[in-house]
Image (tube, rainbow, N blue to C red; front, side, top):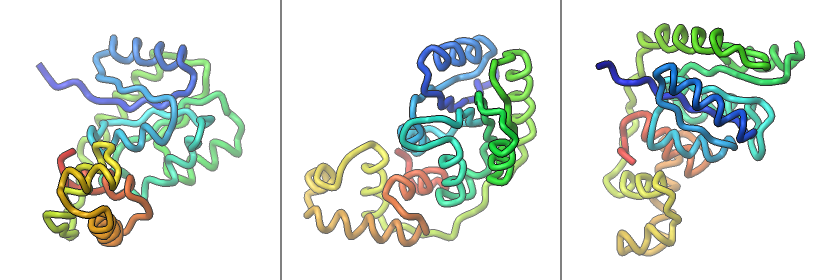
Amino acid sequence: MPERKKILCIEDDADTRDLLIEELEEAGFQVDGFGDGASALAALASDRPDLILCDIDLPELSGLEILRSIPEIGPAFRAIPFIFLTAYGQRENVIAARRLGCDEYIVKPIDFELLIETIQNRIARSAGRAVPVTNVHLTDREVEVLTWSARGKSSTDIAVLLKVSERTVNFHVDNAIRKLDVATRIQAAVKAALLGLIVP
């Protein structure tokens, strides 16, 4: 039996999110649902999806901001098909999404038959996308601190776990951020996981 493809579904309306999960799981997909962009991006570090399905109007980070952050996280993340499913059908929103590199832009109300066909098509087309080889090298300690960061641990928690000072933890986190060419600890953990440098 083939492995079920994973979809990361980002939708802040709980009823819509539950309906999407129900319909997509019935169609044979494995679905992880999130109500905000920050939680969804953090989840990428531990479970890389085959496709991202995202609303535009979200708390904390908008769908456009999530899509804009993809190049900062890494090339492996950029290879994941990204579909907007939104009530915003205005031309300027579609243009902004296309400029940022979304693969599809679907306007609500949801036509589930069309949505499922689109998802299946996009996942099939992405199967041949190569994940680039990385030349980034992390030290054992950097791998440790990023792994624990990906699991939601703070610098204080990690210091206790590794029996080092919090300053030492932050030093290794900063080094990893610099090597991975990202701006934040979460982005570093996500990028490292997608490049196969850590296993959260």
